[in-house]
Length: 443
Image 1 (tube, rainbow, N blue to C red):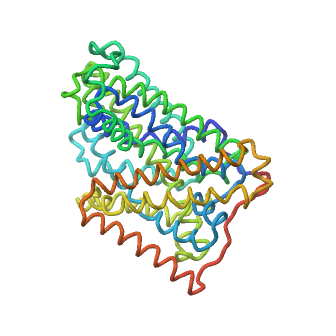
Image 2: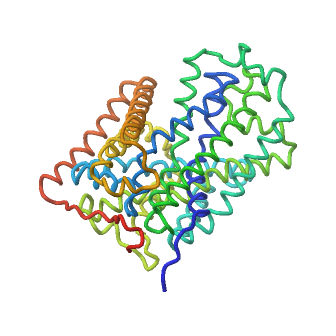
Image 3: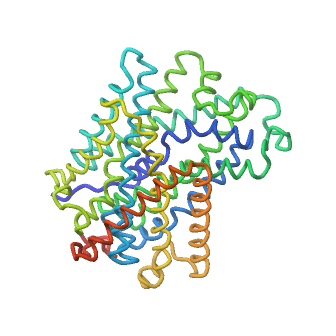
């Protein structure tokens, strides 16, 4: 029997659930402290910037059906060596699942104080782990309704919030609108932009999708439109219901408590923060592991860890991701400090995908010219350059905010992972065997 593929609706739910995570809940107040009531403008610019960052993924997904996510794209465009480096640089991304689990536990515990946050986090992550062990369709069946519930929660927040606006909400020339001028707007943008590119991870579902060369790019573009409207409207309400000095630095739940009566506030906690974290955690299993699975099949890591169960799931990789999420909760160790020492590695790894995009018009000339996403090469290279420049600026601004020891530790992680990849390459331990096809009807 032919395996049922993910349709466009399911892909949009995966993409949207991936991109709407803890960021909208936790960083909006921090951005308000930087830029004041104009936070919604910063968020709009951040979504556009995020779209630039993920443009290479959109383009490659429009010309090929593939396994292995970003690993396959980099390898196909730049060669085996760089694909391996990119795959090992991807490994710290696994820590994101741990951060989701910890935050999820904290919100669940806030509703049911009798359940300790660590226990709540372990239970929730384990539920998603078990669901994902039964395959991508099982994950999707849970992802679809939870994403819809999440979107309803944020829309209700935005609509109800419009009836609680302070005077001056639309006075864009007021002093509260641009607390720190243009620099504040830029700082707000850079703080928010890291929550506007996660929908590109849906590319990891390319091989399991119906009409992937059309539907994967469409899912990313549709989810971009969704977050553009949602992020701007939600942050507009967040910055204009209470005085700026009151809400600056506060999470979105601080404003929600102001506009929702008791029972409705509890519903918002479930529909907003908990669903945002739940959808990201659920879809994180296939999307975060895909590049590593592709690298394993090419010899960059021990082959045993990519073993599949009868549902075609790399269960050892999923188990590793689950352990990274739950062990810190079991041991009472904070993942936030550990993540700080690898965050730069995550940023740098994205650069390889952007550089790889420059090769697409020549490496895949015929497929590029017939792609529904085709544009004049001059325009395409300008967009690639903008993607690269904005990413470099974000890395620079990230470096500016971390201490020298943390910066050096990040460079150490980057260097060690690259060295491991290059040593394995020189020793002949690897092979080019990436799985992709330019004919999406081929399996």
